[in-house]
Amino acid sequence: MEIIEGKKTQVLPAAETVVTVGKFDGLHLGHQKIFRTLLEEKKNTGRPAVVFTFSSSPYEKLGNGRQKRIISETQKRRRLEDMGIDYLVECPFSDKIMKMSPQEFVDEFMLRRMHAKAVCVGNDFRFGYHRAGDPDFLRAYGEEKDFTVQVLDKEYYNDEAISSTRIRECLLKGRIEEANTMLGYRYSFIGEVMHGRKVGRTMNMPTINQFPEEDVILPPFGVYASQVTLPDNSKWAGVTNIGIRPTFREDNDRKVITAETHLIGFEGDLYGQVAVVELLKMIRPEIRFSSVDELVVQMQKDKETAGFYAS
Image (cartoon, rainbow, N blue to C red):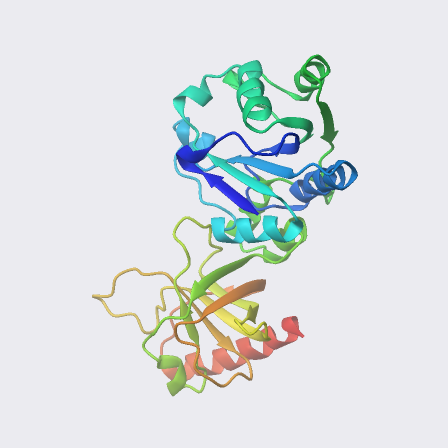
């Protein structure tokens, strides 16, 4: 997959393409439905598949504050490449783009730069100045400019439309299983294994320590059943603590958020390697224990619970 980003947003070399446009935060089941349609169009026509997205959020540009991502850009790129997307265009959301009419946006980006002959979007797709563009406009303009438009209905879970907003709310409340169902895969984070205080080793519960990316949403501080994938593609049941380690926290410690995962049954040195931690279920909130012995007893219970969910 070729990634075109920043000011390099350019005219694609392909004479004709199939295109979808959106933020696609999380790449959830609703997004996947659009991508499947896009890739089916690619298969039928031989035209390369293009995902056009914004590298900075329109939400932030409009002054609504910084919004954390459901998955990192690295994960997003990997998943799109694995699906079979040919081009990922990551365009900065500028003042100029924000003020474009729907017609100007289609002419400049979909037609001149991406050479779209087919466009796939969701039925809630809105674009252009004041979100004036919608699927009806696209269909009518497609007839005039000779490109086809496919509009996909939303996917539903528990009789409610799946959305990035809904998934984000589930994650913030620790409802990991619901979030995973709507994502169509397990919520995860990727990070290099760093050196920690090695406190877990003294309790026969060694952990790998990672620092989650700051722009990615995290569930509540707590203990989670997890599954860990290592660079050799081996998978291990895990118990993951996300938070600030209150039992061992000293007054002068900075409030550094870490993810500490005990790999059940694993023995070895993983420092410097990159591990993928998938969360399965929240076991309990993070709390401060009155003694190390009390913590050890609870950690063994957490380990048993985590092993059950990972089996």
